[in-house]
Image (cartoon, rainbow, N blue to C red; front, top):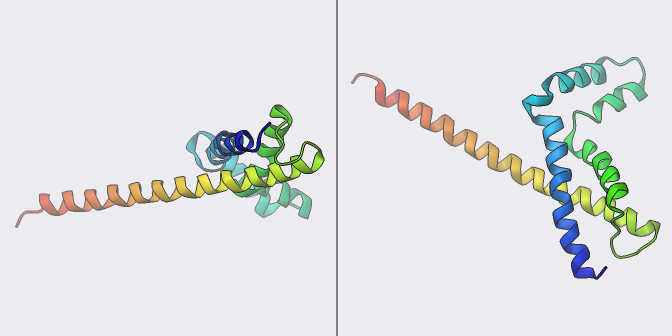
Length: 129
């Protein structure tokens, strides 16, 4: 695979990794799972138990495991075709996926802020003067 094709794969493969990691750790569809994992990570009896359950509450941590699955499924390597290429690809995918998630979080925050400001303005307009 040429370097340009590897770079294209890097930026495209990071999209589903980011999507899965964000959805599991932030969206309402997995709220019960997240609440359970937050509880277990806070109240676990052993360090191993607390750290294991924490992985499902942190998008950065969880993206590492999703990346490993995607590397296994796609056999994607970056720069080198041996085990070193998997390591380079893995950390590169995690970094790009987390960049995407940060960007998505900022956009969502901006949209939420705008909606809140609009609601406040609507309430002020409805008040009798």
